[in-house]
Image 1: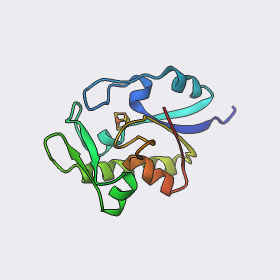
Image 2: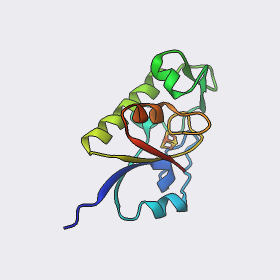
Image 3: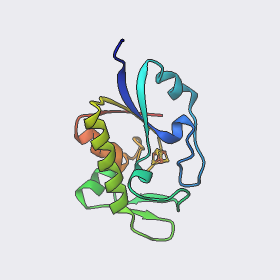
Image 4: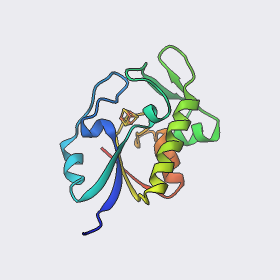
Length: 137
Ligand code: SF4
């Protein structure tokens, strides 16, 4: 049997309702790109232990790389510091990526975890730091 290449994909892009508001963001272009891959849905915020739904959160004082360095934080709409669960979730995604020999991740734009431009999220920063390619949808 042909061995398919593997990739990780943000769970909310595949139609799983993992977003902070309990919704999903299925993306037809992303789903087409998954054809031919053995793909694994991941949600860093859920893997970090946060519930769904959950308060909206944003990067404060820098980007995902700065959160990794400890010079920026992830703060939710009530002022709670969620940096620890965001870092934990990013580490879980990296563990899965390395265990599965993943070299491509398709992640959701505009997220403090999965985002890429204009501000890289925490998971994106950690994956890229370890040489894993991240593409934004
Ligand atoms: Fe989607 Fe990523 Fe947010 Fe989870 S953390 S809901 S996968 S954008």
